[in-house]
Image (cartoon, rainbow, N blue to C red; front, top):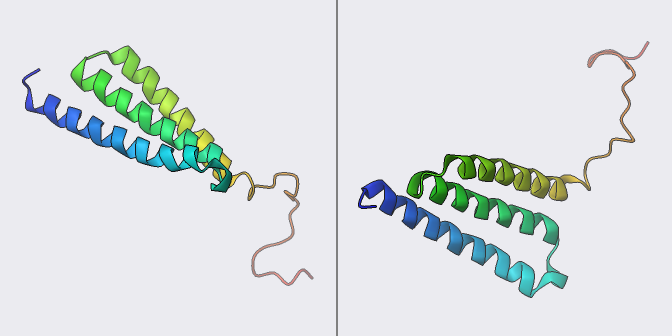
Length: 107
């Protein structure tokens, strides 16, 4: 535990915990006034998973837990991004017919 990398990872993890708390507090305290509450909570959980990865991989050397946390963090990030983007993605309006090229007049 006297390795300099361990101290750097502990400082990094502490910064991630502070960042997560700074992200979560306004979302929870003022949930009525915050847009995309679910997205922000999902992205905060992704930050928590990054912290778990850093601690379990570099400090405690638990590779299986680190890999599971990487996967969970990626899923939380994906869900958070989907919550942000779902209003702008419309799959029912998708028209896959060939309407010509970019420079054609449609003649």
